[in-house]
Length: 408
Image (cartoon, rainbow, N blue to C red; front, side, top):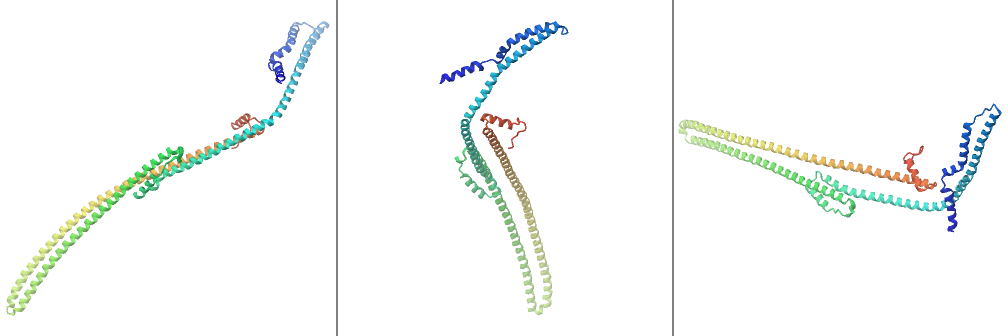
């Protein structure tokens, strides 16, 4: 059987495949070329006058010679070309027969290959979807770590410490997979912010307690000063009352003595008048001294009160200035914390926007790949071999085929 197959192959290789077309055609027309060259020489050198019988004969002979060469060469062309045309027809016919027998088998294998390729592509897309979902879930967990410091802004140290204790129990295990370093970095950064917030909250609370203690001390000092002033005022009032009571008792004693000694009324009245003058002068002097002492004591108390009030005012002004400075400092810290929170929120929004753009880009690429695969599959089903089907799709996608475009 091998010998039967080898003979046609030898015939083809020697008769047609290895034939040089130019040499073959030159060999067919080589005799005609020699005749034509000789004919051209004779025609160029011919001298004739068709008005004469001899001249007419030369022209007729030359014309006949040229026509003879032309007709003979044309006949040779047809004779040589006819079998070539027949071979072409037979080649086309045999090729169609071979293709008719090969096509079902080729299509069967091609369908199996495409089915497997489609299955692999579907598996690849499914794995990509699972991978995207996995990463998004882990990114969401990391986002919780990043946002944790924001929830304690303005909270007490007790609340912040409770959040830190809970945060420190967070176990960063293998469930974060390849994003574990990112999760660890986010956890460390958030923990540092929480600890800084705890320190700030403790300092603010200590400062608030100190301010309250200072205000209570000032209030106690003011109350003690008022109590001392009241005690001194009561002592002055008691002393003046005792003096007035003593003067009244003396006058009453003198009245009793005057009534008991009627015979000495005049003398006693004189003496009493004199005594009253003396006593009145003494009482007036006592009252004057008491008034001066009371005025001096009141002036001293007023001076002390004014000094205390001035000290209190200075202390209150200094305390208010310190409180205002502390409030301004705390406001600045709150502003910085809020600015940082806003920056983190803006950064997160930017990351989310970038992630959304990236997801959309991946989705677009997946959609474009799916459309290209379907177009190539359609060309394959229409009879194109896979390589040509794919090249045709690429050419259309690149806009190289007029009047054709892909709608994604």
